[in-house]
Image (tube, rainbow, N blue to C red):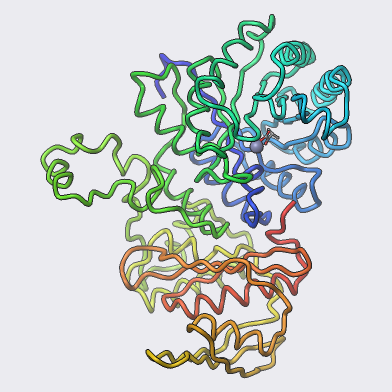
Length: 511
Ligand code: KIV
Ligand code: ZN
């Protein structure tokens, strides 16, 4: 970090706003794994969830608060007593905690959603901040739909909540309506017009409905904001939030321009992006800045020639600085337990239960038999399912016949609660035939909402990582599977999703 600059606080909300992407919700274990990576990356504040939203969310915030030591852990809370109490309880064991309380301040939200007069909103905001201060000395207040709020009302409410003890004031562009010049100017005016604005850090939180989340956030930074709320891969409600990797690398690459710097260790960006993608099943688009597969690939001959002669001709950042190329060959089939465990620890995955590690180690050995080179992504995909749901369904054998001109046929043996069952089906493709064969014996009544397959690493011997999202009675689950044979990976992912539905556990269920 450049110490001559102001510090830009990086507030990551992958585990809260990111989790609000439909289908992206995460289990407690998955949140812990991502939180460990964020901590290693030196994120300043990790918003771990919305403690009152569900028992699962409460436990996840609590677990992250107990695990993370070097980042501040935060819970969201509406500006009402029960939310704040729940957030305070979940954060009790955190080394450093923050309660992030919010209420809407725009005329449209106050009138139609809250059905409250502005004076009442102001009163409730002040009371919430005072209440939150009873649990922690670090309280953030957000003016939901701030970018569409009346300036004079904003000045009054901000002055009052700072006086009540809020140390951070966040003015979100909740609906992604803002435009960079306008949104930045709004912060400038707020900071100039709120008499005690020097007692708080101002924060930006932008949604990407018009593709402007990062531009709006950076404009806010140019106008006095010193905290950015963002997510890995830009995950988040609707079109997502500002992406952490883009904010951090823009500020770092344009130190000639920005008056701030962050303490982020950027070399963890790509591994963390991969982890979030494998846990949520949301692939990263190849041309995504910083973390997309093509972000540093040069296709045109002229560009290749330029880069070979002098890298800076076409590259403004170094791929290795953001964690590309660290995807080194770490392990192979001769690697022992200690080496595998140590590498997992470096990736933020620890095993308290020796039986759990034994299962993972066996999967590692099975994979190493099929594939010579085991990369970090392979290790992550081995544990991508997090804790195992109750295993009602397990794939015992799969045989798929696919010939051009013929309908593909799948024959499989499943173990259902310990009993072997056979099934056969044809389908419009080999994956369709496999899923139909499974359904012919399980009859789950679930709807397939998403099927996605991605190569975990490069090369034709790469594992295929498959996500299958199923919905039944309003409950969404993501099943994951990984194998060098993508049909096996697909069957495993489908069965993982069925196991999640059958176990009744609220795994990956939306809040
Ligand atoms: O987008 C938004 O306004 C939010 C707030 C809760 C900060 O996510
Ligand atoms: Zn948001």
